[in-house]
Image (cartoon, rainbow over the protein chains, first blue to last red):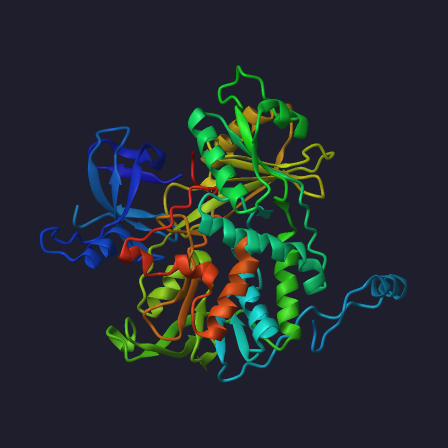
Length: 82
Length: 429
């Protein structure tokens, strides 16, 4: 079980939330190329270690928030950017 | 098969049985060379099969397979050993069917009994939309000459009496996609067979050799990595090994290795859990899969039931078991087979799956010269192992992607040309 700290609802089991994956910088749709846009859509770093990722509190407050998780241990810590 | 090496036969079995002489080791522990023509990272089924077919079909024997652990310690030894070819896309069907053909003759080709059992494979449909997908798959399969058909609940009951096909269950069985050539095989034997055969042909199997870096030059990224560059070797825990060709066959760890060459992948790594029960009398004659219930079941020759599920929803490299999985699995299996409620689970384990957005693999050449990938194997890598090895070997030997793997190019993501394989086990219908 992974306990995810929702900033609004407090600690919740990860099954109450949805993991929306690692944070990737979104290019400006007005100026981006197709290749760049598709790289943003599909390519991931997928590291074994600390990663900044987005979670969606789907059965709670329905808020999106960012935390850091170690993908080798599933340990979680507050993200500086959240 | 063998240039050197010890052939297994009934006569030898009898002799060893009488004399109690020790069997020779299946493969050597070779002296490392400073360079090879091809270095394959990952000593699982895919890496070993690629090495074997390079040597057997193309005469390229100056090959090393390096693995940070031991042969077959990753997904190759953790999967649920199911083989089938009743996929949805014509690209997928042609590919997996070739693999099934290779499995058919494998015991003879590799001189090792891989215990292939083509017992029939049932994919259950619990909803109208699932039945629609089954019909779609059956028609694609028939067109490509695959033995595959949609059958009704009565026929399902006849083939597998332990299934509850009554209409008043929560997830009634409305029908199934029946694939008679599908079945199971002893996965460790497949790995050992390829390792032994490759070793006999001169391939070096370098176990406990971790790759820390892929050495490149001329690329547009830092240290000469990335697009436009070329590979010159790998840095390992036993020093540098030179090679103009480096192949990534590392499944769940594929992104970590690929990032070393500056080639980002469209992959996220997810654990997939499986479990096995205590052994019991043989009662389950087919392989039973339910996409809606995210479960697949088969009974091994020892009588244990092997269960697999879909991947864990949160991507991770951690392979621990969870209570959620066990609870959900038990609920779903008992939904299908209420009669086994007293059976006990013996073990639970998990392996890492390299999931792509379209449930198809990523194979062939990349933007870095000499760096090839055979990754993105998600939940279907075991059944594809032989054909992946054969086509990767052809791709390396001929310098161009083999026809069967051309649709699975790494460029398809940035080109927007995905191969949506909704016949994969991880996909709910």
